[in-house]
Amino acid sequence: MSPALRLIDRYILLQTAKPLGISLAVVLVAMLLERILRLFDLLAQTSAAFGPILAMAANLVPHYLGLALPAAFFISCFLVAARFSEDNELDALRDCGLSIRRFSRPFLGLGAVLVLFSILLYGYMQPYSRYAYRAIFYAVTNASWDATVTEGTFINAGNGYTVFAEKVDMGGQTLRKVFVHETQPDGEVSTTAEEGALALSEDGFNLVLLLRKAVQIRTGADGQHSVLAFDALTLSRPFSREIPLFRSRGDDERELTMGELRAEWEKPAPGVPATQLRSEFNARIVRSLSLVFLPMLAVPMGVGAKRSRRWQGIVLAAVILVVYNHTLQFGESLADLGRADPILALWGPFLVFSTLCAAIYLYAERHPGADPFGAVFDWLDGLVARLGRLMPRGLLRKART
Image 1 (cartoon, rainbow, N blue to C red):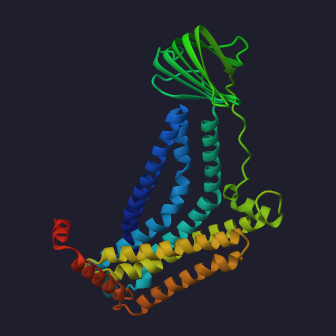
Image 2: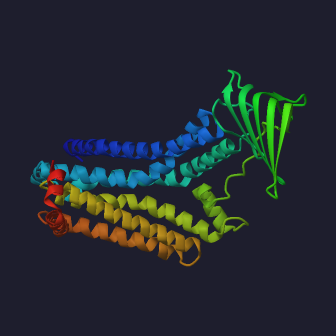
């Protein structure tokens, strides 16, 4: 290979790296922000520390990266091919004797690298990160109360206790305007007090709440109420900082690595059914191998998106990828239930998708001036034009402005 051709490869890969990195970053940030907001809601409800929330978000990165990688890779290949075609750089390369196949070689090489990376991602990184996320989530949601009360916040102290204080000192132990609700097998008990103080018993196994000027309302299982007033009242409940151990990794097939899936599949054991193990193993291989065929579809589609028709290509690509992904999910569900063999349910759609990509790629290579997606793009243009004519003129004018 001559230095000029190697320079072209580096140039194409450099042009691909930018949209690939931006696409991955945008999708990952959007997905993580949505999940982090939900984790913050969990933080507010459980009074968990901020560190575990960040750790859970970090362990979600491999999962979301696996979701975003195929779409980001396809979009980057499509945009680079469309720009080369629109700026006539592709025509210049053809005049120099470079075919579509030669132009696509860097994309195919990058796809092969991403196949190896995705096998590592799906097969080993995601199982461990998924288990780590669940372990941290378990620790956060099952962590015992640290015997402190946040001002103006309802605290779930466990075992049916809810504590609220309107005013709290800096140490979180001296309380004013206290409300305590306790759920018991024979009814409910609600207590209000002017002042209160939190303390641990001498043995450290009970939490003691000392209340002054308290009023207690008891509601029995029969709905009867009784009201008692106390100058001083002591409430006690068991207290422990220990968290029960989380289960071991492997109760879910998605927590098993590729090697573990294969070993469990060949030597069935109680727990995860063998059908789910086989389905998960084949699904990971199929999703990984699909990456190498994406440039075969993206490059001809990008070349056909000349004359500012990129949105049509992106819409068509989104439809194809979504249909393919949902087909794999449906096949995986059938294989999980044992109603279909993974070879048919997963490798069948993969064979159809890869054959379609290869056929379009070979057609574009053998007919340099042809546009395999021209008819589809024209149909989308006509559809948009018809929808535009159906829209009210005022609404259309506002949309344009």
